[in-house]
Image 1: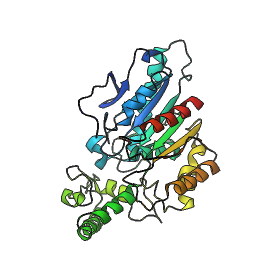
Image 2: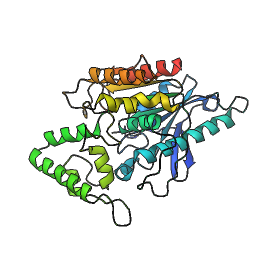
Image 3: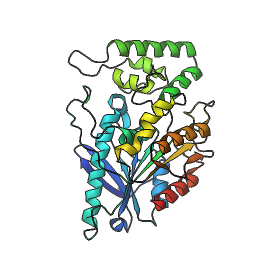
Image 4: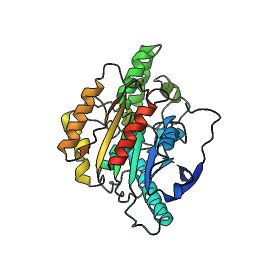
Length: 340
C-alpha cells in the first residue's frame, strides 16, 4: 500500500500513445544525464510501491533521475497483458527518455547518458525478459496489432523481489481458509484455460472471477486463460511458461536459456544486480534464498554477464520493502549505479 496524503512533485511524460512515465523532478533535474526507469509488478501503478519515492530522494544529490513507468499491464491490466507487450513498451520508454535527456543536454553526446531499468516483483520478469529474449521478439498470435521493434540497449538492470508467481500461487492455495476448495478452483481454472485459451476469432478467453478469487488473486480483475497459464505455469518445472523465470525448482538448463543468455543478446552493456527481500511474504518459507541466488549468479556469469557484488538478500525486507530495508536497498542501488 502506498502512503496516503502524500504528494510527489514531478513531471508526467507521455512516452507513447496512452502510456506515461512519471519523473520525480528536482531543482537540478534538467542537468541530470542518467536515468533509472522503475517498472512495478502485478496490480502496481504510480506510487504504489513505497520505496520508489524514497529511492528518488536518495538519488537527489546524484546524476541520476528516477522515472516510474506505467505499462498497459499496470494496475488492472496485468490479467490480459504479456511479457512480450511489456518489454515492447519498456523499449519505447527507453527511447523516449534517451531523446528527452539529449534535448535537455544538447552539448552532450546522445549516448553519454546511462539508462538502468529496475523491476519490482513481476517487473523483474519484465527486466529479465527484456535482456534475454530474441531482439526483436517474434510475432505471436496473442499480440494482435503489436509490431515488435528492436529493443534499445541499456547500461544496467536491477531486479528486486524476483519471486516466482507459480510458487506464490501454489503457496496461497495451501494457506487458504479452505485449501481443498482453493485447489479445486485451481484445477478447474487450469482445465478451462487449456480447453479454450482463445475464442473463435483468436481473442483471449476470460476466466471465471469467482474461481480466480479463491486462489488469492484479485477477484475483480479480468484474467485471460493465456495469462493465467503463463503465471501459474502448470507444466513446470519440466516445461516452464514465459512468466516462470524465478521458481526454485527450475533446471540448470532453463537457467542457462534465460539468465545465461543475457550476454549473447548484447542489450545489457554492463552488469546486473539482484535484490531479494529477506521476509518476502510471497516467497514460500522453504525456499533457500541464498542458494537460489547462487544458482542464478552461476548461470548469469557462465553466460558472460557480470553479477554485481551488491546483489543479495535485503535483511528483514518485505516484498515491496514498505518498512524495514528501505535504507539498505537505497545504499545497494546507489553503490551499483555509481559503479557503472
